[in-house]
Length: 399
Image (tube, rainbow, N blue to C red; front, side, top):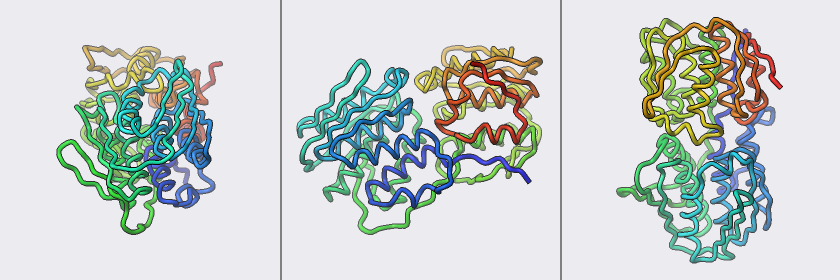
């Protein structure tokens, strides 16, 4: 029987690759040779390989996590001279707190960081690195700053044998992703001691078996939604993974649906969602909301504005293209259940999550979508259109 197959978890794979590189574990031990890797995972893997040389030029394309993770890794590898570039949109996204944190901690040791407008970003790492090391960063705009520095602390503690501290200032947006980073450090043998807002990282005392990378819960959301209307089983469904977007399954259950090896049942009400808990799942949940029996409310949606596109406006534009009513009060988005009565067109603005959500919306209502930006899915789910065809998604490229 056909089944819908998600990719490996992009968020898990990125953290696993950095730690594998730190610990000297071959990448081939993590990534199945026949697996179609998300583009962000390829960018990060290739960047880590490039950083093994004294000089490197790294094009991060539109990958926020690859850029932020690789930036810190470049800064803590002695003597590295690295030039980063990326898309204009990636350059517009906020990175300054991470740059300032690196300058504050490593600048006195000789780190030089220079920025273009916005590219290139150049890193000249100190020739030698000796502790003590202490990073401080705020996480109000993105938890990736803290994750990047925690992974950098792992490399420093491994290379020097000294403990490294990271202090968090203020709140932390998308805290679940930082928790995922902490979990990967602990699963790979690093020690983590927390005191108030400060974490202390210690290198592993002995080697541990490297954990497998689970299926991607961000992608599983699209496939579960498709399974609800096509009935196909969804592969690689694994629970208690620690991935923030697994919260999607909890939200589905809260509205009366069943999550087994597919999505089943009849919903009893709309969603109530804190967008900061599972931000990447919000466009998926918003299109599912069109089929629920009551309005769905998505709060704290400001976090969506600084993704690969402005996903708050993108989600509203997608639903408007299908003539689904929404309202926005402050940062609370309300989606009203509504039948999509005709085919529609949508420009995803090269945002993979908006493109896949448009496909799901069309299939949920048995309509055709003419879509601009189909190739963008390669960022996180290269085989999405193969899986969408199994679910009989009706899509046409808009060029």
